[in-house]
Length: 153
Image (cartoon, rainbow, N blue to C red; front, side):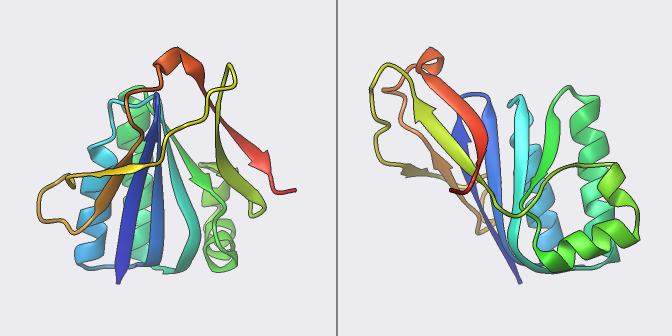
């Protein structure tokens, strides 16, 4: 079973995946979720809580990488679990994807001393996929947000 949530900040989306990326309905839902984020400059797939990936999951990652990059969006893998990292190395796909290893976390910082408001939930995309998307309120202007990766302290 695979569940995912989307966090959006400015031109960046982070798709947080939990469970197994294996053949089944979860692959279709993950594909649809990532493709809904094509208007973003960068999409991070947070794989820190994925405990298993099979050939179907690898095929989906390659498909997403090709599709997303072809449309001018970057797809990056964030903190893949030990099991996922091992499979990526065995298949040499670690040389295809931009990987941010375990120990990195997604960080959003507001500039000018303004704090970000709490996250709010928005309707899922696509409908009935069971995937929750998280969006930051529009009160913080785009120019006031810096998105980056930082090593855990």
